[in-house]
Image 1 (cartoon, rainbow, N blue to C red):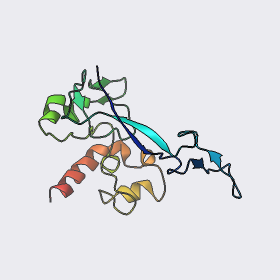
Image 2: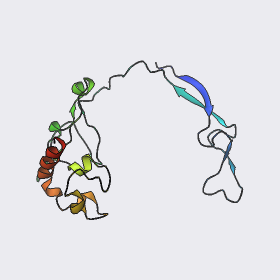
Image 3: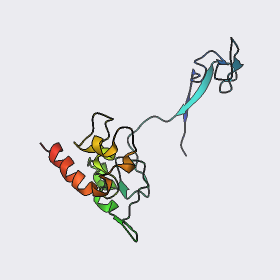
Length: 157
């Protein structure tokens, strides 16, 4: 049984005023804050941190989803294979400090290391997307294996 501690904090929704002003309240109107019922305060429940806990049933850890579904098992479809086992790292490796690797069969370096327009991780990323296009429409996406080769060469220099 987990025992939660409780403290009284300023209501984050009304900033302690007890009143809420949103899109529907105009010209000086406000409504009583639904979260704190007008008191300006609310209860916050927490547990003291005693160390990182283990997560049951986790086999593989990935750094991020990049907008895709991930699984601990490789995916073998009729037209493609996605080697999830080559990306991420095992849970034990992660617990020991390993950095999860990208799933190169699933996404490209631009998706993995997206630092925004003008800071593309590869020379041809901006050209492939052409302005404000979608990454999934990149003309080089089907050739992401060579994009990974260039990305890792640039990263290691």
